[in-house]
Length: 224
Image (cartoon, rainbow, N blue to C red):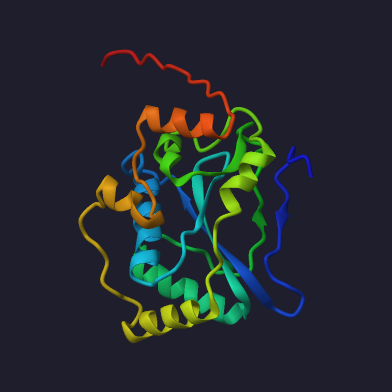
């Protein structure tokens, strides 16, 4: 309960129903530095713009990536969730492997301390996501009140929204149109959509609004 260890929990009930899904975006080898964040931002915006979903929750893993959290108002059978996740993958991130048990695998619930990295996994404001592209973890435990504040205004996907999204994906044979151009900062920020980039002033202002005093490490890299 103190979050001093990352405990994996099951999102599936004993009768095979689930109300939540987590899509992991890990840092990819031989790719641009922040490509996993850029992909998450594009997918999250597509889910809202094209499928009509409410804004998802976003987390950092404490190690090398992010999580996109989707919740359902009405529990759904795991077979349907598995089909839904595969349709999403084909439509929006075909180059990324979800794994055969993505719909039922236990997930680590933030905030918690990642044993290998020594950093904290946590839910974050989407506008701060790009700043964690190199190291997706916090040096110190996040305040529980701040974590709750990030989640309290989020909405679950209604049954009608979920069924509509399934119909859209199935009718498009799993390949609905995807926005090819990078989303602008303004487009990401509007109507609750994800902000792909945040300035240092944005980050400091947001942390101060949560009564958090930020600390920053300045890395001096040798010239090539």
